[in-house]
Length: 420
Image 1 (cartoon, rainbow, N blue to C red):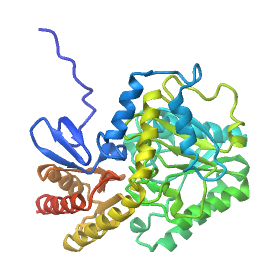
Image 2: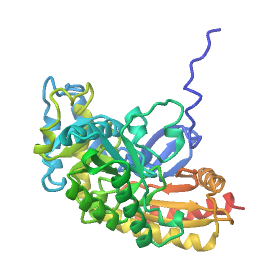
Image 3: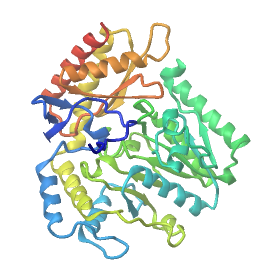
């Protein structure tokens, strides 16, 4: 008998669910059960599963052309997407390069920053997640599993403290003052401004623990970047496209990026990513340094156009803000009932629940137990954080008040079962 081919044994599913079909906030398993999906493919299915307008746009495009390699021939969906993105991009960021994955876009942003400044070093921040490819993993400190075992990593990377107030046991202002002071120390002792091409940061940590970046910290980075001619690169892969209750996560601050990175929710599940910069900055990329076989795929671009239309027409950024307030209030109530919940935080529909043992150490076992108990309650959740002790709650931007209430009730039942 011929041996059976299987997926890599290293690929571990967070849940045992095998999907038959999905719609909106719901995944319907081959087991006949209906699961409330608060994972959204790790924040990807922004308009919910299989939104009819996104499906229709993709279906129509498949019948026209699937793959129009965009440095060979141009296709209409990419031109339309570029035009629509201009309605949302920060002022001055009027030039876009498309790729396929978030990590690919991160690497394109780093390459551009180094070429545009003619400087070698990148300063990233503790807890950031920027991807799994070698350069992106070199910039990632959300957990050793993303960066260990395949050294050497990319050189020219320096990691600065992130103002993680809960971990330090400080208030936010104290944490921000500390982190900015340490950044200044790095610029004085490790990577001089004249050697520093970019600061790279997420407006809310993703895999690093669903921790909002304090607005005053982003403002402090912007001030230093402007003073020293350093590019501020904001990785909006997970926090962007309405997830935080504003279209871009950095809009909770006054800071604007020199280079913006987007992916995930931009196309409701179809793979496409992009970086945006000023035409002046983008023009400093060396000829031939940008490209890729699948970048800006026609079907993905059509889905992205439809996604932006749905987000605008259905006022999903506002819905993310309102439903996020409802979700956060419910999670805070549950925190009062369960002492092992050390912290609840988030922006919009990007909420994190951090579990802490009685001695104050991270409690990854509790987070995993609650996440797994959620499956028994027909609620799909994920964990994150360097210690795996944060449960992240990521509903679709289309989530309804009733679905939030259902999710909170099921999460409460998972807490009761997982922390018994």
